[in-house]
Length: 420
Image (cartoon, rainbow, N blue to C red; front, top):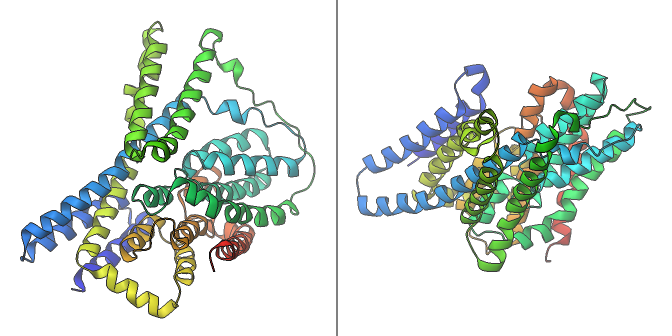
């Protein structure tokens, strides 16, 4: 039954080589996930059992996809209404080191609520408006990548991998925050202290206040949409904790609330504004390609779980590393090269630790912060490559060594804080 692991590795290799091969990774993931299930059924045997396995996989995958669609739409709506400028426009200093600390920590905490890719786009765009020198912008952008990935780890809704663990019941919101907040702070603090020593001098601060772009009678809409958008995102873990409502239902409720609010705001607006700012129009901009990529990968992993391949791999890796923590650390290093979604998805099927076990926290921390070790290791890094034209080699020289030190220090603190 080595066919399925071979197909998964082959498919994943094609995903990693997406750019040189010019084949979309979502297409490969969907073909891989669907093809592996087709082959599993084609082998014959108890089709009723396989249908039950597929139904269980569908339930798990659908809950994650619905949550991602809802969260991505809410973030997109707030961005369309320029709501995030209410935060970014308040950053004002002419000390480049102080500015680096402000940008990094704001990125860290925003990423705990939003996804790291959206946070990175917002903060890199802000830095481009403030810093005239490309060299300075590169260091800022590098730290934004580190901060966005570290900030997403300690929140159940901050990173897609942490969200996967949360939705599947492996961690709780309070549990992941208590176990990973301080290690995440260390993962950012160590490289931030080191990079701060490189930057020197003052800068001529440019006023980034975008209020002049907002027609006076429409300015209130920005505040209202921002409030209900952020409130909706924060409401999801609260509903989960108080009422045990699945996160996907909480995010759909929040999206529905925001949709009602925007429809009311647009009732008396001009037709052109209604067309641009209605959620019906904004939905066309949702990144469905990424959502379908997650679907394909998760379905492919579910085949490995259904065929018992993940369980066998878990036993083998346990023998090799001897400890789940060494394994987690290795997964983090691997996530700097390959996408962390399938790595975490595979670990969910490989191990059966109880909810809030330190092993799950270590996997979440390693997969999230490990993506900062190379610029291609996370969505935040890939986006920044496009926005600031940062090369793989520059990041490897100037940011990766500091990110590695932060990763090691944070992981050591995580294990030290855990039960002994």
